[in-house]
Length: 294
Picture 1 (tube, rainbow, N blue to C red):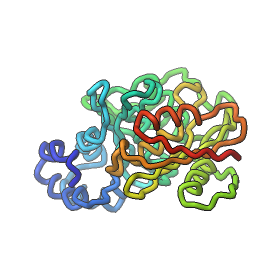
Picture 2: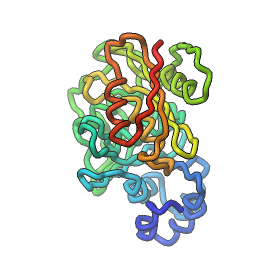
Picture 3: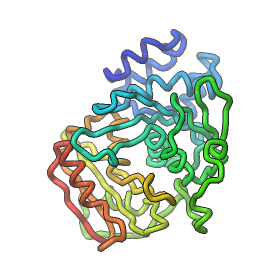
């Protein structure tokens, strides 16, 4: 079991520990439970979907990286597939505050990068801030997305974001988590470049058309790719580097052990991710960033 889970795991009820221990003990535990695993855990513990998601929050929060705030937030997103995806807030010393990731953004992006088609609900241990509410408003779940908080009745995103402004107000029909393929191609055939390209082709940028993707290679040779997730309100947009860092972190890897990175984006885009990506990677100790323009 990854050391970050030990303290949180010790606080769980015995029946839940027994059900989760075989999953958490895997070296490659991906910070998610498949629908089949969820069904098995529920059968062993007697927990329903909502109670299980709440019970998993301490494990999700254990994935947070908080060198600045020391404030740990966990989130669990439930896909329509029945899969559960962990999310946690992330902060990066030496980088601008705008590069931080909120727990809800992490859980949503985690599900998206794992191929989930749509979210049914998100469970979080603290009330979503306005930034996160606007970020979730970009989803194809819309304002009907259920939000679960401790000691509160379930409410929809629409309840937390009344009179919302989002993609539908701008006649955008392709929403975050909808399947897309922008069809870009590059000459580079190495695995890192190709994964960055694949991420770019699946990125969500309906306002600027500034599609982009980032792929990271860790010191142990693993590759993690992230896609740009643009938002109707612009500021809550999540850069592709953050998507890759979310997946890297939740997979149990160290953000300070990135060997090299590739960014793929359009030539002279309206919104460029290059400079911010280079600066944040430098703060994490990675100086090797290759840029490929389309």
